[in-house]
Image (tube, rainbow, N blue to C red; front, top):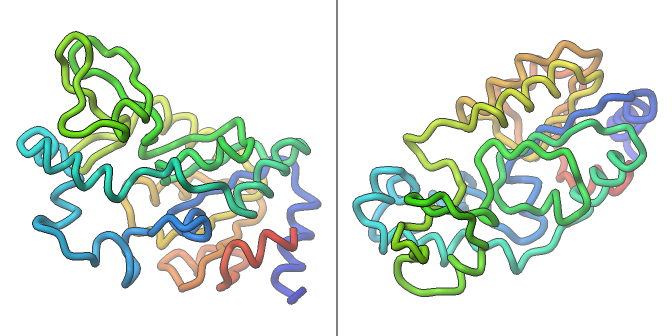
Length: 238
């Protein structure tokens, strides 16, 4: 075990209100592609740029094209939690971790057993009718072809935050409250470039901030400990 991971292990042992703030790098070790790496979704070739496809305007105007991309690239049901998801769930079970704040929409934290999860960008596992607001399962969206419709005739929309859409106020308030009351903030698997989610770490008032990411970020200077390694390699030793 290298010195930095040993430092993190000691911080975890001495902390009582840990919050984990994670991004796409948490799920890449489960096989889910990220967005911004050289092999990520935003660097693949489609008829339209993925950033445009995943916008509210595109969803409303080219709905069938949206769902072709959505079903092809964002169906997380075939993936399973990895060691990082599992270790975080265990820390919560032990009463040390108070919340996970995630930018991911795959639901893997909950599948691993985490109970207090703030999904800033929503979840592909939840869907609702834009007309009557009825809930619809992931199977009712991923398991059909064309545009998914409710019994009332309304359009079914995935409960994910698209470009041009605001984050859910209740989720944001919960995430900010958790971060501001944490004594240890572990940030992992995120480049911290997505606004406004990345700005929420500024609410941290606790003792130590740890950043675990394969590459450097603009926030490295704020952290008390920076570990440039894969999350699985780090969390398997905690």
